[in-house]
Structure formats: structure tokens, C-alpha cells
Image (cartoon, rainbow, N blue to C red; front, top):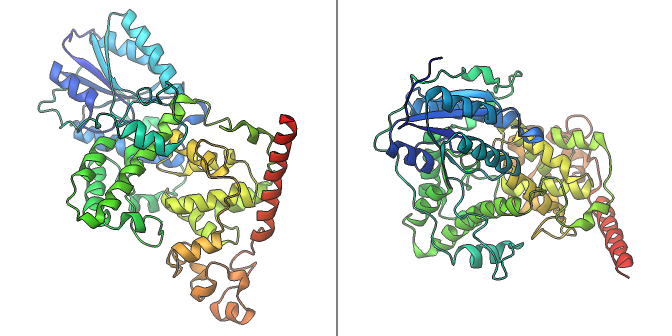
Length: 486
């Protein structure tokens, strides 16, 4: 390809910012002149953290939407950005590039190396914050060390600082260099699953910036009121379901923050507003922890858990993955995940507790399954959340806090609506037994058309016994720590 001299142009590298509005890198570049918008599916650096199946499906749809917003000018490639970007810059004769920062450890290493490389080629590099409300290196305790507990991090570290950046509009004028470079076809990335398991997901979601805006508007106008009470109920639509849009950057946290801040609510709903903003704060905290402790996806934050007596039971793991544990609230959650690429947050805690405590299987196994099956699979949130439920993380739930899936179901799915939606074979059971069919009398089971061990599994563990075994394993861990200390 002949070299095209376009020194006034800027290459914009899209990553987890697949939007036009409130995109600081794109906004900056458009103000300088023409823009070459590029997306690279990195096959070199993610390693085990390459997107899972559900995320790849979402990414495919999101790139289609972004390309439409860019009037077909998005140039897509796959390979190593450290090789591709210098070559693109030199081929197009571009002397300036911009990107919004990413915060996963492998991304930080890659981006740092790229910045050195292109600066050696006399290329200007402009990086921006388009993904977080507060930069993780700016929020520190008075002694200069990072926070380990969420509440002081958010209330003292974040909320006492300057308010988050106000969202930017879409660029007033966006002139793209569609002629300068020819990219690959999106299909060449092979993001779409080879097995046709995703039609149910396609009915649930609208990936892309427009879908993100619609979801935010619907949430703020219809579900923000009563959010604090309703968010724990998987049987009703009470949560924002914004997490995949935020992960892929189809929506910025700044947009979600200010739309929520400016929503006209009565004084009685201020707690709902504050509760949702604090949930955005939890997202920030997860990224904060990953930035300051980059081994979070692999290593126990609390080292004492390195000695924990995890079980190895592949059949139990498979039953958990497939939603055939015989525990309705767990099975409903795992089936929701498989069918929709999503799981209600309260249920995530229930199924997570069941895996790491009742089954006593390593949190790495849950982390890996969620990574592959969640459309909102995010390295920071996934790692921090699994360590939280395992008791091994920062500001974690204590290990002895074991979620009872029966009482949790009775409290948060009182009529069994959620369980019946995803475990329809139990629909005939009276509400009294919907969360514990093994306790139903034989006559009730027969009248309901439920045959335990046939139409629905027997429980793979006794909840009471497995709870005690988990507590005994934790007590042994504590006793070992005490003996070492002495």
C-alpha cells in the first residue's frame, strides 16, 4: 500500500470504550482533525483472560453497532497491537494517536510498551480516562497507601474528592479516514459461537451504544425508585442490568453517574439514588483493587487461604455448572446464566457461596465458569467478587457467612417466581416447598408431577452437614494460623 501523508490525522484505538458519546480519546482526536478509528482483537497479550464465549458474542454485536455509528469507518484487525499499530501509523503517515486507558495488568503492560515504541517513532500519544470515575492511583489514604475496605474507600477516598468528570457530548464534527487503511472483516475474528446456544441471549440484550442508552433511561425512569429494596429480588425486574454495557464501554460510568444524580426523585427515594451510586462505587473499588494488587485474579488476597482444604469433585462441579444440584435457587441461577449470559447479583452470591462453602470447591473454578458464560465478565469485578464470597479477598464476607439457598430463596423469591421461570419442572409444587422439594411429602410430590432423582435431581449435598464441614475446614485453617503464630 502506498504511504498516505495525513499528519493532521489521529489514530484512535478503541478498546473497552465502544461508543461515540463521552469518549475522551475520540473527542480529543476529532477536535484535531481527521480520525482513523481502529479496533484490534488482541490475540497476543490476554493469555488466559481472552474473552470467553458469552463476551465474544457480545463483542461481535457491539462492534457492528460501533461501526454503524462511525458510518462504516471502523477498521478492524486481529493480532499483536505492538506490531499492528506502528505499521498502521507508518502506512497511513499518521503522527498522532489517542486511546482511553485500560486497567487490567496485562493491558497496562502492553500499553506501556506500545507507548515507548510509538514515541520512538516520533508519534504523539494522548491517553485519557474514559472508563473510571476516579483514577486508582489518585485515591489513597493519608499515609499514601491504598484502601482495602470499601466504605472508607468510597465515602472518604472518593466522595470527598473532586466530583467525577462530566460526560462529553459526541464530537460535533467527525471526519474519518475511511480510505487510508483497509481492515479485516468482522467475521474473520470468529467471535460468534460455533454452537447455536445464543438465541436466548439475543432476545435479552441489545449490545451497542443505543441499547446502553435505552437501558439506562429505562432504569432511571422506571426502576431507580425502590431500587434499594428491589435490587435483592431476582423474581422482579428491579436492577439496572447495565454491567455489560459498562464493561464494553458502550456507556461510561460518568454517564450513569450524572443521569442518576440528575434524576427527579422525591426525598423518600434519595436512599435509592445513593444505593445505586454506591454500586457504581463497588465497580470502581474492584478496578482499584486489581490496579493495586494485580495478582488478585490468581492469588488469595488473604494468604491464609493458601492452606485451605479445598475439595476436588468434578461431578459436583459439573452439576453446579449445569444447574442440576437439586437445590432450586442454585439451579435456577446457573440456568439463568447459561440461557441469558447473566445472573442476578443476589443469586450470584448464593451460587458462589454454595460452590466454595457447601461444595468446598476452589473459587478459581467459579471464576473460570463465570468468565466464559457471563456477558458482563470483567476481570476486576469477577476476581474481586469471587474472593469476596470465598472470604479470601479484601473487605470480604467472613468465611463463616454461608448463604443458605433455601432461606435466601424464601426471603427473596417468596412465591418461587424466579425458580419456576428457570426450573419449570418444579412449577407444580406449592410455594412452601418450591425452595426445598426434598422436604415435600410424597403425596405432594406426586400431585405436583415431581419425581426426585428423575424429573428433578436429589440434592448433591446436605446443606446442614456441608455447612458444618465448611466451618470445620475454616476452623482448622484458623487453628493452623494460631499454631504458626505461637
